[in-house]
Image (cartoon, rainbow, N blue to C red):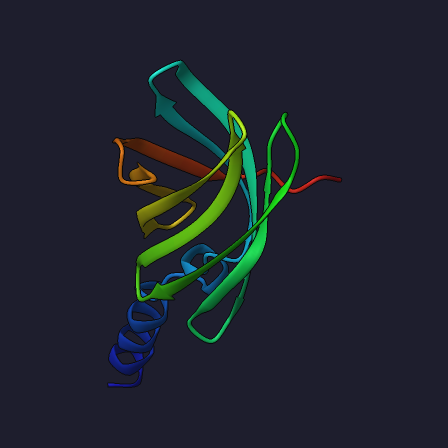
Length: 123
């Protein structure tokens, strides 16, 4: 009986994913499709409750992000200067361990695919 209970306890803990793998917090290497081709950038996310904050690191300059997380559903938005006009990009993605996949809405004008992988920890 004792072996059975120990086995059951082990299986219960083994089935629970690690907190790190289920958190949107961290640094993410991201890509998005745009009419001009695939764009790579980095996203740094902090989580406080169900609110997100952070930075989108782009070759054209860093911009702040804000958003929400509810379970595995991650939504964040940020505004860039696009040809002298403010353009708000909104990402809606599903968190799956160390990956996020979803769509990015480009100011209501178009939407395309978004994907991100958790960046490897630096030594």
